[in-house]
Image (cartoon, rainbow, N blue to C red):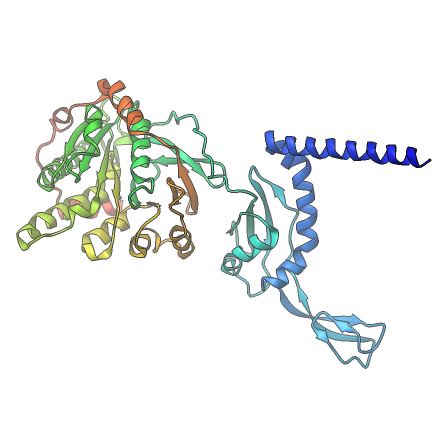
Length: 454
């Protein structure tokens, strides 16, 4: 009898061990199906069952008066010990926000919560870290799709630990450079967001992102223009795919003058055709788009002595004018810098206002993070300052949908970018050919006001 019991226990132990090993292997080798079949149902039950306690601990409940029936005098209510003389009385209870059933996502789940009276989405954003610890998840993001509702998006594990390359985009002026924390591709679309500001310290992934752009834009029918204030060490290896390259401030001034003249010429072309921008022109006469890559933006504004004041003012004005008018005439900016601060002058602040796309890698000073993201969302600023040095390529991205995300770019080596530049060198339009039609006309204040109001 005892031997039969031991055999049964042994068999049960073996079955249990095999089941545990199978579940571990299932989770290890195909996490997505394991999450949908096993992990999500258990999580949904746990979240709904503990929501009242977690909401109370995170300060997301409200006191409401309810009629409460007590069986025994001096009973314990939700608000503590109360003196009860009647069995049916009106007391204050903690009411939790109404929560819908959680829905699974690729890396976690999301759930819609109804706001209580007096609550705003920022109340939940401030409690996001407490919610993440309470649910034992990597992070919780808060968004508000419509008034009175918030969506809590929980990420079970960090999707940016390992970023696999995604097939490139086939659309013009759109480049897939990495992955967002939501699991979706991180795309830089110049047609939607024409100008970008990219800040990051050394070894933070800033240059790698520029390499990814060069690899993605090289096969496209666009002209690439480089401003390399490091003496050309960054962009010179890609010169075969660049239509123009400036490596000093004097060369930058001349190249910016060419861009301003190019805008004036394209302005006249659009005016003659009755078009608001070059994309309304027929394909046969539409000029080639120009993407301007600026490295070390601060070098354009640094002044060693007063003799450089006029040159810096001219550079700042021309670059700001390109940012203001370039979108309509197919000229797009991607400005990079290790440090971007307001102490560089009002020109940098004005340029930042024209750059809707913001990318902030790990930075060495809070001023750069504030300059890049501070006017968009304070929560994004906090996340940017928390990027560890051990995760190069991770950045905070404020993009075209009005939200900010953690993202990580693919690793693109200099060798890969050089190979792409040489492979597609035949697609490089000569700068003389691009600017051959410019009439050297100046953009008047009336033209500027007309285009900015359009």
